[in-house]
Image (cartoon, rainbow, N blue to C red; front, side, top):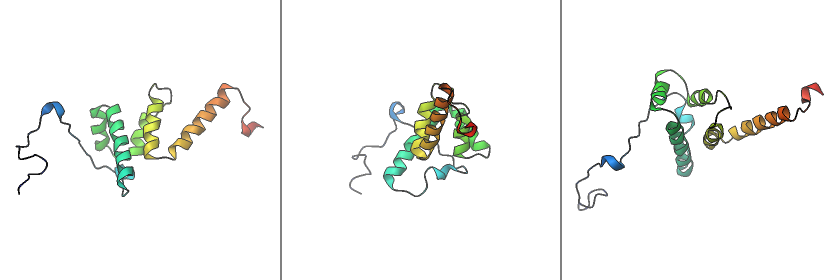
Length: 125
């Protein structure tokens, strides 16, 4: 081989200052966020999973693989309350994986408006 794979004849060496380790744990439900799809969609969802992993501690991510739960269960646990400073950031990440989740966000926002403005509920009209 005249050109070693992308190393330009140099010895491949990892530099600890510019390397990252990606740990992938196959768990039930994980592939619902990836699955078979076109590469652009795969990249979008992989980026969303990376943002989720960055937002939680490594201990929590490791623990998720120990108990039987799926990705949606982990997200539901993280979103136990909307009274969080980072709730909208989580919602944006989760919506990039499951676009229909945006409908739930809009519904929740509308419900909060009804309460804030003391509107009469449809069920009481």
